[in-house]
Length: 148
Image (cartoon, rainbow, N blue to C red; front, side, top):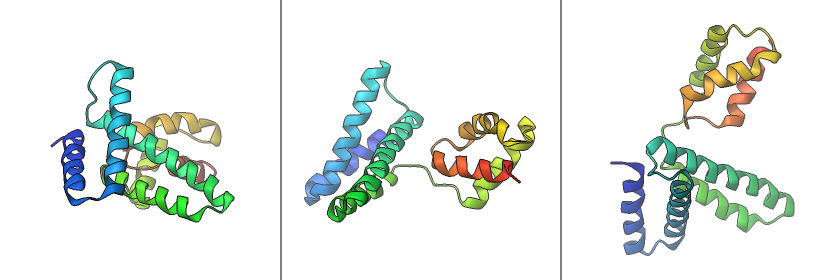
């Protein structure tokens, strides 16, 4: 079953059960997917749907830091619940050890020796992890290994 089909099925379940919060998040995700499809002029595959969902999660994480700064805890809670719902549709996230191993392997592949090679390493790592780890976490891990 594709991610879009899962979203449709979960939307029906949320509608029938009266779970308005979950329904709202799923509708927002579907809307973002439709917008991306119109932008790219083709139907999105699962990888592209994951990219859209990751962008939506990233937006919410950025919003959380802003609302925390403003002291709006109820909005922060709402955004965290939205992230939780969206995360259900993402692939299994990598553990820190798995991510470190991929980074080490990529550093060896590109022959990186200093922080100046970070772009090369990131370019090698990102296609391997496709939605299974947050980009900022990957960046921190790469920096950690290149600064040793």
